[in-house]
Amino acid sequence: MTREETIEAKARALHEHIFSKPEDTYAGKPWDLVNAINEFADESRMMTFKNAKIEASKQQIAKIQPTPKTFIEFGGYVGASAIAWGVILRELNNADNAVDVNVYTFELSPVNADVARDLIRLAGLENTVHVLEGPAADSLRRLFEEQKVEKAGVDVAFFDHWEQFYLPDLQLCEDLGLFRKGSKVIADNTDFPGAPAYLEYVKSGGRKGGPYHYETESFETTSNRGPSIVEVSSVVSTQ
Image (cartoon, rainbow, N blue to C red; front, side, top):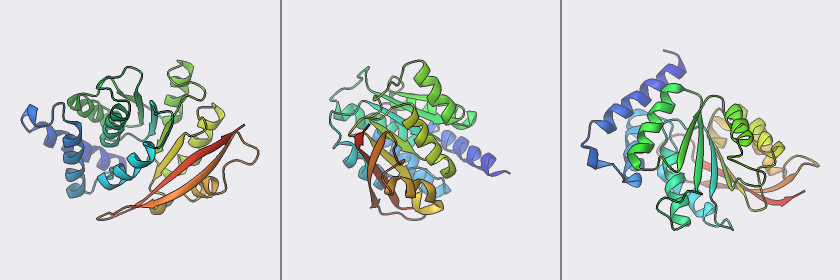
């Protein structure tokens, strides 16, 4: 099996595991579902965004003012983190189903995207969390062309796909003018397997003469295995 085939096989196994339970086990219970996904992921060595990292990110997202409403995610996989983002945005906006609260998650694999959609529906978040299939950069450009994300309209961007695309995809966000002062950019796996070009960029404040200036902080979380750092960069000024 290729690496991609192995990743998809684990996604299918997760889907079978979750949907083998009585429907009311997780239906409309997003946090219970996220916990179940991450428990299965730990046992199966799946790379999902674990609960300690979700909590650390939530604390940073809660600091954003005005309250964040639009979230873009590069690397949806099975939808665990996207479900968490959807619940967090709803909670921060005091809304069970706010139509102006949106999470857009980009997933390259059709298999993984289908699994994510099913889990998002099970969580009851299909009106908040939207899965876009295909290369992340293409999906983001399409969203922008359709005016579903607008200039200065993205409050949070999360990077958790292939690390070599972190920097070019961040720069695409910049070129489209998506951020505002106070927007946050969260990146996983910067310690392992590592994203050195991305880290150097945000730690230096961003592109020289570019439209945004960042301040960044590394948050270490508990982890049973694998990467434990979440890098959170804040847009402190715009041009």
